[in-house]
Length: 119
Image 1 (cartoon, rainbow, N blue to C red):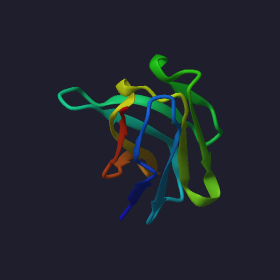
Image 2 (image 1 turned 135 degrees about the vertical axis):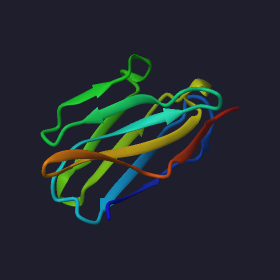
Image 3 (image 1 turned 135 degrees about the horizontal axis):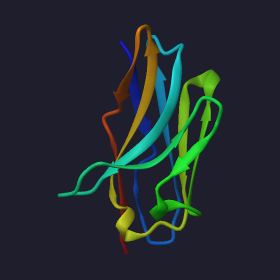
């Protein structure tokens, strides 16, 4: 059974930085995309950033230039470096992994980690 575990969520002041980590385990030999979504209270879950196995990445416009996604394939781990944090970045951040298991790809989710940006 595939499991994802996030870490690194915290409370910070505006302008601060955080680094989120997400490690996948349990039958994850064939992970393609990994990434992060976030969900603020009363809002839908939106994509923040994603990265392919070959390290091609994509970002939401709201975080471009401030957030950076990376991954270590050997450790099945994805990271999200978040700089210049704003109050509007406050949300629960969820990581995901798209795992290929013939004949299809299945998306797995972590339980989420809270990020709060407030003065």
